[in-house]
Length: 130
Image (cartoon, rainbow, N blue to C red; front, side, top):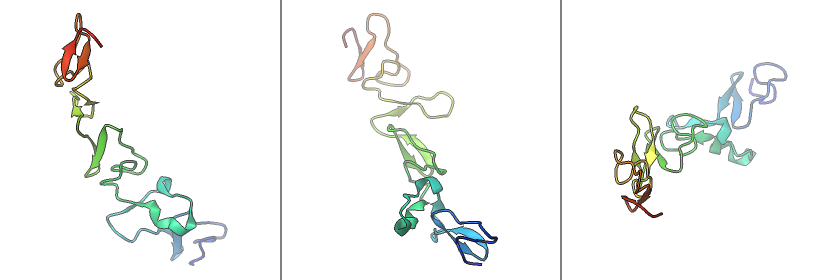
């Protein structure tokens, strides 16, 4: 059974990015380093390989299909990690990317918060003016 419109049984169609092999819908990915992500498929039957994603480095499929990193993060070995100029200011082991140059909650470093008479953060220092 290799009919992608009737794969393994009548009326069982393989989704885009998969083909029928031995009665089972199989991803077009042949590289073991790539993961089939249906959400990444462009919808162009001529580009089914686009469904095959390296989840160790994909910004929009980091570590798993459809798990996107924020604009302050890069995907490194399947994990969203803060990248420059952002620092990870999480206190619970997660990711809280903060720009120490302008974040009043983490001004200059993760431990310094601006408040009172100097509520703004400018170039890594608390300031009385925005």
